[in-house]
Structures are given as C-alpha cells and as structure tokens.
Length: 354
Image (cartoon, rainbow, N blue to C red; front, side, top):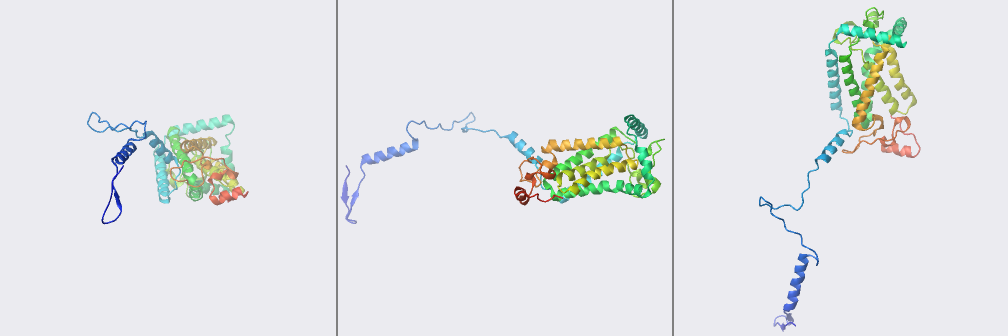
C-alpha cells in the first residue's frame, strides 16, 4: 500500500503516506466542516437593498419593560438621606405656609360659611363648642396650657414622629411621609375653595378668644402674630390631620401598650384643645380626617400597600416593596431585622419598635 525506505541518518524506516489515506483524511475534514449528514447548512448572510449584510434576526428594544422597571424602581422605598429630608421638609412647610397665607381671606364669605357650619351643627345636635369654650376658659391654668399645646405640639410631635420613622422604620418612612404631604396638599385646596372663620372670630357667636384674654405667647392665630397668618383657613383642621397621622402611625408600628395608648390619646386631646380654644368647629376636624384618608389613599396607590404593611428595613435596589400580614402591634414579620425574625420564629416577641 505504501512505500518505506530506510534513512542513513536515523536507521529507521520513513513511511510515506498512501494517496488513499490522504484522500480519506481530507474527506473527513470536509464533512466535519459541513456538519453531520442529512443537515442543511445555514444560509449565508443575504445582502439587502443597500448592499449591506442583512442580519439573521433582529429583536426590538424592550421599551415597555424598561419603563415598567423604572416605575417599579421609583416606587421602591430607598434609604432616606438626612440632608435631603431636612431640605424637603423645610421647603415643603415654607411652600405650605406661603400658599396658605396667600389665599385671599374673603372675610365676608368666611363669616357666612361659619354661620352655615354653626347652623348645620345645631341641626345635627353637636353644636356644643361654645359651652366647652366657656367651661374650660374658667380654669385659667388649663386653658393657658391648651393655648401653648395648640401653638407648639402641632409641629413638635409631627417632626418627632418623622425622625422616629427615619431611624427605626426606614423602609416605611417614604410611604408615611407621602401620606402626610398629600394630606397637607389637599388641605390647601380646602382653604381656597371654602374659606371659613374660626368660632372665635364669629360675629355674635359669643366665643372667647382665649389667646387674647390670657395673653398667651406663640399663637399664630391671635395676638401680635395674627397679621402673619390667614385667619380664615379653619376648614379643614390640619391640627387634626397631622395629629391623627402621628397617632395612627405610632399605634400600628409599636407593640408596647402604653405607647399605643399615647398614640390614640394624642389626636383625642388635640380635638378637645381646638374646640376649647375656639379655633375650630367639630366639622373642621371631620375635614381633617377626610384629608388624611385622601393622603393614605395616595400612598397606597403609589406603594401598593399602606406604610405599616411595608418592610421595616429598606430592600435591595430594584426590589419591589412587598406587603405582608402584620403581626402583633401591626408589624409584619417580613419587616423585622434578621435578629427579630429569629426571635419571632423562636416564639419571642422581639423588640417593641418604639
């Protein structure tokens, strides 16, 4: 089949491959390149009309999933930043005060609306604000305390609850803050559409302006500060809207009984104060509650769950906030830190969350 010869240098035969063997090797190589038998080779790229190579397949850019992903990421709670939150709250309150005080006072219309509210309450049998106002005013230390309560705690308690949420419940902070901001925003619309004089400014209402009578310092509604604030923006009552937001937030997020009781007592005490000082009617408080309901609805629509049902800690970037059934005190097991989850699984109650 093949020839062999012995070389003089190495002393071993030098085999020359047979032509048949070489032809077989070339055939095998060609078959490997062409693929297995019975298969059709893939067509080459076909030039298009412009002379370029036409790609075999083209996939459109998934713009809709990208938009959905961006929206989902924007709805995911992120870890709040101190400097941003301070700036946001300061600017928001400045805008709120600016808009509230820029609304035309419309004194005549505000007084007519006050007479109408008073007549409605008389028809409903709840027009007892004047009796409460005169009774509490007869106890000097009590009414003076209420005056300071009205002038200060409205801001102090709200800020304290925001700071507490920021540190202890960062995953729920953004949703709770949105509910508060939406509540305040819709209240501005109420001030514009329905100017209302407080009971203490009604003509012939025989209400006592307790700040003027007892010379209480610090109220933006009477005394030396009355020209700095819109006196006819009593509906809705943001003292009720904000205090109820604070009270409910504390009530659903803590498990310590005394803290939960305080959470409920705070808006209750605020309701008594606003009526005793003749700054609001009962129905103003109802307006504040409706505004808070609107704010909570906005937060629910945006985040897909109420704040207390979101995770307590901030999830990884891009993860969607997942609602879960709350445990004791309104806290969900998914929202607990790892140490608390282990304690809950072992049958412990975990930290109170205060």
